[in-house]
Length: 333
Ligand code: TYM
Image 1 (cartoon, protein in one colour):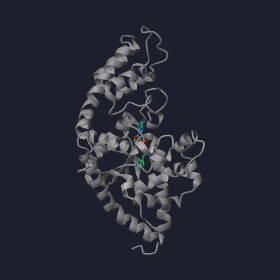
Image 2 (tube, rainbow, N blue to C red):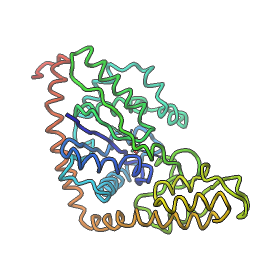
Image 3 (cartoon, protein in one colour):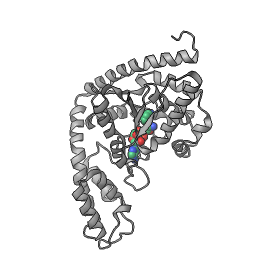
Image 4 (cartoon, rainbow, N blue to C red):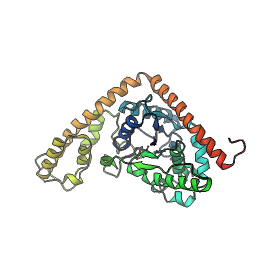
């Protein structure tokens, strides 16, 4: 049996890296697996990075993340879609896994090193982040985890955590696998500084719900092939950020035309960016229209999440009973 689980942090507005790398995959796997596709807005993870967390905005960002996923096509009636802090078992299983995970393994995590490097004082929770992530997945005995490339190391650690628990306490958890969207492993940021990331802020991201004017404002000045200094210089689309975005948004004809136009200096960068805007509008405008409709019915969003949390708890409770009993806790069934 396949069971899918994935999570997304409410640390900022959802961007097209999240969308192409993960959210579209959630919908596709949701169509296939229905109630065995479980998706979670991981609000307990958000405060682990003090630079990206503000208690005054967390509830709004959590709501907006739910709204964006539903607008992209995630149906809370069809799949299980909920907020992590509403299912207490995540924290409990996370604690149990911290008991068995060597600190050295956690210190090797690339995301930890990146984030910790920017902080003067490192919260222990930042180090424990991937342990809670493992608990998210294994609480549902999920074996399939749709994510972007940046999460692969965490999924490998999840496998290790499952293996260790099974070895000590008897077969309990599957060893889950990451499922990657091959065309969008690592969508680059609009500032040309590495991958698009919520924590890098507004200059890096193209928001799924961002206005076309605002997107154009960033795209107009975003870097292109640095060797193409004048309009008449031929360019190389393979090193151009804008061409990376064309691959996500444009049809095959446009893709060939802009690649060819770039190489022969037949098209300037501004015109190439304008053609990209056509694709962006085509993809994002219907999502944004659904988001505006849904924003007028907040109870539908909140009701969908509450219903999802109920169903998630029903799956999680017996797994937690099994774990408590294997751990030897008094009173466990
Ligand atoms: P988060 O919130 O950073 O990102 C959510 C999903 O979007 C993918 N992603 C990208 N894909 C391609 N290009 C990009 N530039 C890009 N940026 C983000 C991420 O890989 C991710 O799939 N640790 C997770 C949240 C989490 C989780 C889980 C995921 C918590 N528990 C359990 C899976 C299973 C995270 O920070 O995602």
